[in-house]
Length: 361
Image (tube, rainbow, N blue to C red; front, side, top):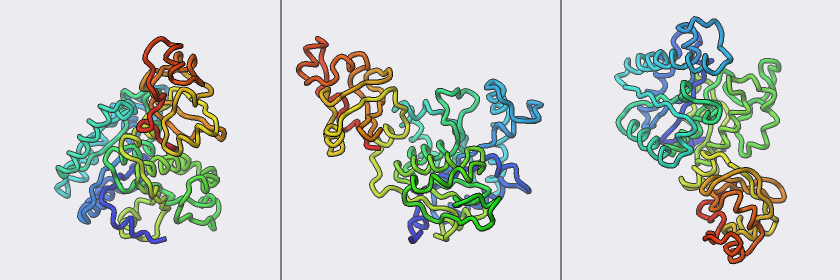
């Protein structure tokens, strides 16, 4: 399969993990050199960078990464300015300015904040700066964390409509075994279906902080945004965009969903589950909206406008924004719309989930 699509990319998000930034020599300078080379090819580049907590350990007087949340947040605060200083110095050698962007999941779950973040990132790139994006670890708690910067990179790709996400790792690819143990472990050059290679993730569980499983999940998220993903080594970054056969290329979906539905599918977390039968599932797959009569069971707690997952006979197959809260929906599940309105005594929308607010997963 030709990699010409990669050589024709116009916008790329590059994720750099902490392990690569504490290597020998000056990894910041090496990566800045490569980013500048890519920009010279006409690529618009954003960098998702880990490293704040690692760089904050020494100022905090810590010998190892702490486990409690306040210490992690404090280390992130102490290290973030040092992280940005290193990136700024590395790019200043090329006359390029950088910009710090700190995000939490709350920034992409709220539609207004999502659009604000998108506009700011696009304006920075249009202005010739390199955005250095990181999770806002100083304020993020479990409820609003991305969890890992692989996922953050995929969501940033959605924010700016990037063509490619590059996840840089020391190992440089997905392998059919663990190459640190088996020298003959085969590199997987191309992935068409991520489910076909999940069996390999366990063998590579120690690849980086997030692990290979999170990289496969990120590639799946990026595909929903219409972006390809490449797992590659730092030394192969420029080669990826020459179309060279390096690393592992996860091809993007040929039918990316529109921006609003991307937001629903990837930025929002479901507050509950609606179970439907096979007939209703097929109707939704054919482009229909979900009516009260199609709902067989309601699980979870959610308000009007929240995201819910839709479950068919074989499992979750869709996500959408619901027009009725969980208490009311339990009362009217399975009813015709006119009967539902009579039961609740208040206006009920014609659709529990409108087709414009529903995305197939």
